[in-house]
Structure formats: structure tokens, C-alpha cells
Length: 267
Image (cartoon, rainbow, N blue to C red; front, side, top):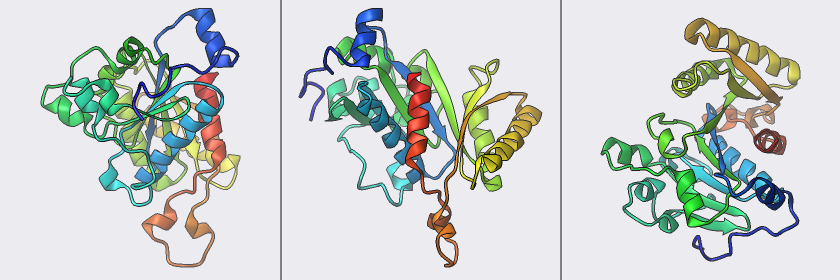
């Protein structure tokens, strides 16, 4: 389906339409979800959050930056497009070639090659949020998900990004989370980084993991962190006695994580 295959409307009685009528057709809010989890879990979080938002009546564009080459489970299940968003942001193809309507209230695009087009100096403004408004989509939110964000590309998505870092409770994952925070906070070092913790058997484990991460961020980056929520998540290795593999260690993402992030975005 193309951008114009369905009229860009979600009705006159839902919450999203009411907000647009009250405040005018402003730019969509853009939320960048940077995940230190494995590529499959990261892609699943983007999908789950976007579906949670659309089921609440919001019009959402999901921008998936996770490389297909690094996935093991979701490479054939996620929506796919013929063109990368980087091509549209370089004016090589029209926006409707790279952004497809895939469900009611949900659009999708992949942007795993956007940094390639930035490196070759092809990306041009206006930013994505402005382009979608000019096209007439009337989006409420743009959700960008990545396990390897490129800060140089972010201004071509929006001049006003809202960041959420998704970090694992695993100690072995702390270094990657710190690296993500360091990348993302270059442009907003004076603001606490918003963190969503995933993993552990209870809230105490999540709180303890967050405290350790916050201490590391303060000591090494001089950055303060803000905890949004802790969501428990077990791995396959927790359910059987077989030897652990990379796939078994990856967390099984609970639906509550999608709902919590969607609530943070829409509240």
C-alpha cells in the first residue's frame, strides 16, 4: 500500500483527532528509541510500541533503523519496502516510495542505509517530520528505533527529537548502554537521559541495575539519568536446562514493555 492508498484520517471522535482539532495540525512528535538489546528484540520493540499507539487511535510512522543483516528471527516478519528512507531524504525517490501504509493508522519505512547517504553528502532538508506534514499525513507520532544510532542523521529526522534509551539489566550489557547514552546526549547533555530498564525477575533487580548504570554514566560521562520504568523480562535459557546460546540469552520481550513506552510517548 502507498501513502495515498487510504485517506489520512482516523475519524472525528477519537482522542488523536480531538487533539489535532484543538491545537492545530502541528508537526508530529518524534521519539527515538535507542536500544542496547539484540537487533531482533530492538526491532520487536519498535513494532510493539507502534502498534500500541495505533490501537489507541494515534497515527504513527515507524522508522526501523535496525539492519536486516544483523537479525536472526524477525528478518522475514517485519514490514519491508523497496526503497530506504535515506533515498527519500536524498530526494532520489518520492517520499511515498519509501514510506508505506501497512495497517490502519500505521506507516512504515526502513532507514538502515540513511547513514550511507549522509556519508556521501546526499541527505538534504527538510527533515522527515516536515516532509510528512507537507505530504498531508497528519501523523501524531514518528517512532524511530535503532540499536546503532547515527547522531549525524538525526537532524534529518526532526529538529526536536525525544530520546528514550532501552537498557538491559544484564551487567554485560552496561557498556553498550553507556555507549548509546554517550552518542545520544552530545546534543542534549544538560538534560537527564530517559532510561527504560528491561530484564530481571522483579523491580528490585531493575532498580539495582539502573543505579549501577546511573553511577557509571555520572562517573564517565558526567550525565544524569532518569528512570522511566523497569520491566521484567526472562530469556529462553530461564525456561530450560540446555546450554546457553546467544539466542537463548536474548530477552523475551513482554507486551507490558510496549504499553509502558507507548504511555510515555503519548502522555
